[in-house]
Image 1 (spheres, rainbow, N blue to C red):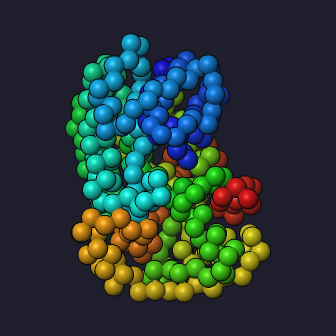
Image 2 (cartoon, rainbow, N blue to C red; image 1 turned 90 degrees about the vertical axis):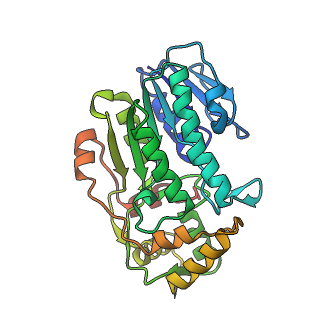
Length: 306
């Protein structure tokens, strides 16, 4: 099997490539690189420099089975020290998906695997969630054989975002601000388990055609409990300060309408203040993968690898 991967230099991508290389089924992996370098070296890997938005310009003289799209942008996160604004997020996510579909057609790649986000099913979506939902529709209407993954909050070793921020707040300040009452359910997934699931469906094409699969961890817990578990694991006290969600969300939405990049987005607040749990029993039964508890995963390697 020969694969083409975008986003292979990222947090999830680097782990997925390591796991894919453990399979004898993988003959070659082409990896699109932009500015970051690939952390894994192998004779079965070939890097190709480029931008996902211009992916359709690339012609590969090889028979590639599957294109895996892991790349994406989230407004509020930083690139080169600057927070990404909504326009850039939309451009990378949506236009990048359009380009990937053209790339597949140009290179006779019949199958595409697209990594979306659980935020695509938020009742109130921001630019990121909407761009992922719109990209899903492009994939579904592309005529390609496809599978769409919707991961929840991904955590684990070397993570620089998400739960890493909570851990650092607890370690440094002993305080975590929580938007809303903190009682909405979250179901974070460890990066190893997320990568194992994507690997399974990548290698088993017969069970993947035309599906949308949510990738959630084993444990559904409230945001409050998640913060407390992290504090207990690192043996630090924590105080949760609850902040009204909607006034902040609307204020941020107004600023975002001016296309100003901020370190936090209205969608992040919607995420924290929405139940995002689900039933993974069928997926874990189908794949034979056994998920560990949030506490066990955290104690094994921590959120940021400390």
